[in-house]
Image (cartoon, rainbow, N blue to C red; front, top):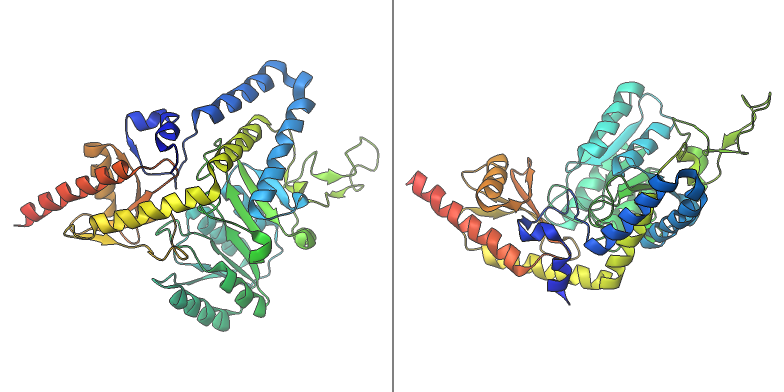
Length: 395
């Protein structure tokens, strides 16, 4: 990565720890933070006196997100996070008892819990297909479950939060279409680390966030709804700003409105423009580094890490190596230590920030645009020390 040391110098957290957990929470570069804080100060200092001005600046974020994911401006709604978007779609569809939903066996609670809520409330059944070690096996599992279930909706992640596997969405979506299923895509682990083109992928709904691989403000997310399917969703909550015509206090207010004709039907009430100005700054910052350069850097890091740890006794690699099926996020395990223990020891003894994974039992490592080979060497060295200690205990 060009100018890697300069990029790292803008991230104070790297002075104290080895940060390998962008998949949970990205860290904001100082130049982005300065713009975000400036916007926040203006909002709080001037209130309504600068409100229109600040929201005019924040509107750029909608355009930037739409361009980033291959969507139309009217298809993007601002949300608080990725979970909001997923939950809104599931709560807005009109369900009937006996409807079926197909998801994967590697999903985050952000999707699983809203699916469970739909099941409880409407008598919908939720089923899983298996994410396998090769795309062909995953496609076969998906095809088998489609044929068996003929679901109304399929909902899964672009990149698995458990293993970092990138699903072959471009092949799965047409298959779902053949069975008349709608498609909801979770973009939490893909936007910012690999290319996303929702129009090309052909999905109906998608949700993402700004606080992971975009390294933007916490509390920024987005929902994509294909423009011709907007009226298929009836938002569960409504307030001023989500309807048209604009609210007027007349005798007809009870019945004289309809939801907006764009995705902003999911936005209402007073909302802070500062995080969206910060998200625009974050996207601009990464774009200046170069999306292709970031992805190349991540691939190099993943290949290097695999080669480095392949000879360490007891270390297991659970992620894809094929760049088309992998990502900058990988999951590792160690014989004799479950994921919770490994996660705790790597932090407490070595100050390496990563994430515990339950299935498979291990830890997840995120290789971001600022990650260095030295970071990964610290991880590999720690794993070597733990492997020797584990072998000694067993001996």
